Amino acid sequence: MTTKNLTTWRALNTALKDILQETPESLVMGEDITTWGTGGGIYGVTRKLFDEFGAERVRDTPISEEVLISTAVGAAMRGSRPILEIMYSDFTLLGFDGIINQAAKSRYMFGGQFDCPLVIRTNGGSGVGKAGQHSQSLETLFAHIPGLEVAVPATPADAYGLLRTAERSSNPTIFLEHKNLYYDKGAVDFEPVPFGRARVAREGTDLTVVATQQMLTRSLAAAERLQAEHGINAEVIDPRTLYPFDMETVLGSVRKTRHLMVAHEAVRDYGWGAEVSSSVVEQAWEELDAPPVRLGSARTPIPYSEPLESAVVPGVDEILTAMRKVRTAIAA
Image (cartoon, rainbow, N blue to C red):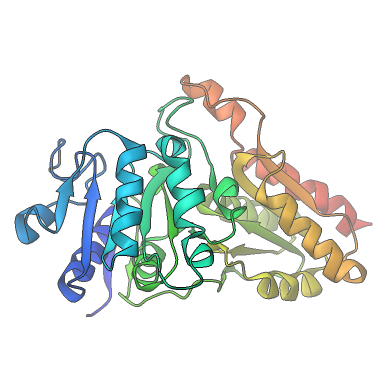
């Protein structure tokens, strides 16, 4: 298939269609995935799949996350390859037993007798006014659990490629999309993207920035301003998966730039940025010319009010300010 310019939601829709066509054991499940305004869920990702593949392969489920997550786990352990859509990542909390105690542990608890090829697609993040119970960034919760793989695509190409890889995995994958990136456009080459292989989104020499999803796009914008205003060239890295995590690419960049900043949309306290920062300190202490800088959202629920939401979640200006903090060390 030739490269096409697609929105993120369309890239995901195409990936699901390709999976259903190529893998007879696959099925797509979720709440209202055949209805809603687009006929394909709240963001259109499952649009027209029901029309092409029917009710046996594309299934609407009851509004009961605990039940449908556990059902999908059982289906995966019995030989199906379900892709389950949870309308918002916040709602996965209702089915944590199925995710953490069942899916994540099944291969270990049964001595490898069962695989669990389950993909849970959902979305997180702020920026569209969904308030505190529909806008959380929960990726660190999932990355902490042994047995789970965690994908955080930021581009249409990675949305397609990482979903193809997730579907082929024998492990359960939490596939976290960002609701404010569904309509971003980009080139998609329709190739799988390996887990645990970061992407250098912007090459640089003076500062390493590790960021995901919405913080990635904002970090790239801040990096352009940093170079234009201060002559400092930041390298921006997109991990693409939080587990497995490509620490080697980060370490290689830090050894070149000698400075590190991590930016994520999740609350700063106890976030995955602290894990990356501490790992770099442990493994490349002598390569650093200054302490790492972490940036994340304020320790508060996401407000409904747009001005308050913008005050809680770091924007380009806040990211640039954090970069300037590192700049002080670079200048010294």
